[in-house]
Image 1 (cartoon, protein in one colour):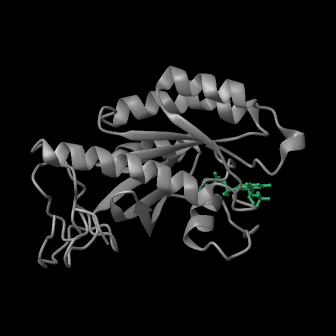
Image 2 (spheres, helix red, strand yellow):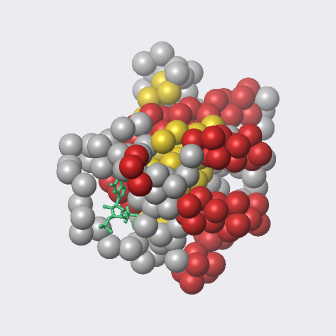
Image 3 (cartoon, rainbow, N blue to C red):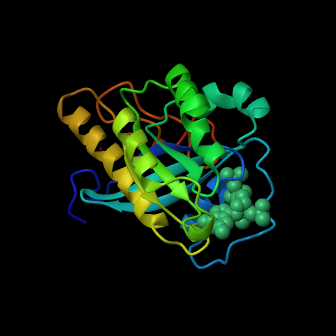
Length: 227
Ligand code: G3D
Ligand code: MG
């Protein structure tokens, strides 16, 4: 390991990232594909009824980092109540639409970007647009050009993925976490803080994510922080 953040016995930094997008676009399937890459897609996955998260170690150009990936139901009924908690201390967001469902793409600008701006400090937040279900090319309703236009408008990159085949799934999470980590390193070197350690303390500032990765409670672990 060669990075500054993961040198000499230090635990890798932990970043919270959140999945956003309409119900049915494949958010849960993308997370499952990332965390269990060899498992065939589970067609029994039900609509998520609250908030849940999973963690995954990912590579960046500056070494390994840990992503804590939050996933929620797309239903507005739940989302409205849960959004403040959902976005709290998030460092990155994956905005997901279904390339075979034009409505899911329109929801991004009509609903999800607004909620993002209302509940998250967007200066701080890295964003990636993901067009999922690219294995269903013959049913495509959203052109790449349209998605690219959205990216220009909102200032983010995009990838098309398939949770079914696995195409670009790892790449998408790695791309986002790479942006998040670079931002944190830049903030840290300016003395603003941004890298968060597993014990809930932070390298040099107040903006980190302070929940324990396992149980979502403040951590009591007082092990050494290597940030
Ligand atoms: P959500 O978490 O955004 O609500 P899910 O979406 O992950 O629950 O997925 C919704 C449905 O889309 C599921 O089908 C799932 O199998 C399917 N799906 C997810 N990603 C892909 C993909 O990349 N390609 C294809 N072809 N299907 C996908 P069911 O039938 O269980 O509703
Ligand atoms: Mg889900």
